Length: 253
Image (cartoon, rainbow, N blue to C red; front, side):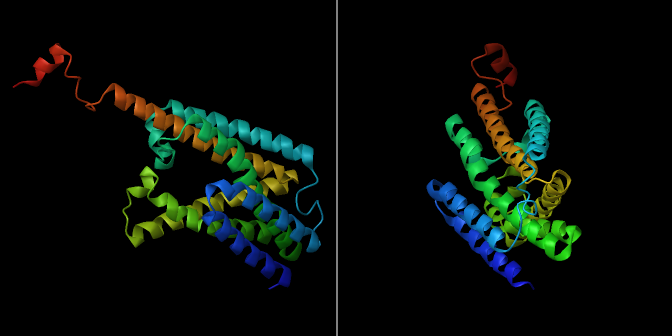
């Protein structure tokens, strides 16, 4: 294995552990420090701005903007269709305020998650793998490692999301969640990497990545608010309110 690639993998492991375990207050500063460290590493490894997807700004902005528009429309449709609401059910957004959701969507996600992960996987790692082994291996390798990067978040998500929590709490259920997450994020990693190949800019996957994470959080919050409002309007669930005499009499003795 190339020494530069080996050092990069070690940096990625350290970045994954430290950013996952740091407190929320220090998450963005920690992620930004790591982002700058990876950009510096890319330069020291001999990668050009073109190889790191940092030169073609205009195409990247156009591709990224189109991705944001498409995902936002899709998320809005999901919120509007009650049958799709289970897909957005996430206990982590219950009880959060609109301000907290806005901070996560406009600060934590773009400056923390998106900036770090796109620089790591679609700028430096993709550029280095492509220069060493070609585009196909670069796309495949960066996507696989992107999937493995999400092992720790998958374990956290298992008990927080309604769909994954239904699998149970045993180790087999958690392994299923982890494998499913690796497959899903790895597939997304292929798309993100191909956006860099097509556009020549890391800004393209940054736009799509931000849209998927941020609009997803907003959609989950809106769905949770709607569910809470519905529950407040019907405290007895599907049973009619007792204060309606015509309904109460139908219930029998």
